[in-house]
Length: 173
Image: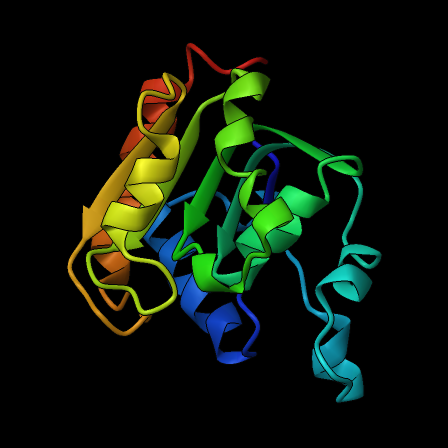
């Protein structure tokens, strides 16, 4: 399995995402952890600039956190996936035009999992779930929380692993 992991804006989210991935028990060799150029060069973070640094190609699973979700949605012309996992969609950072990208994922007809805190300050579970309601290929799960931290990495990792196994037969090989 080939996996692309795209963390959130803050460097600490890289370690957090590694904990999530460890809880899935996927092979470390199959995981490509993206590092944002702004981290290395101490630049101002720019979504559009970071898109240009993403690896291109097809992945079995793309897993993202926060602003990484927006970057992934905007980079669909350079990356593709069989399954997409969005954790902590930073909805309040999306422009009106970018907000159309999330419900449009239904057109891809590929399995998508969204994990959102009940009271995430960047977009509550209710807000995100409303955007993808009745989309047959999008599963939106609520986890407890209100600080955009998604601290129960073990549970989140298990949820993702179970979902990937369940969707394996419907995903394109």
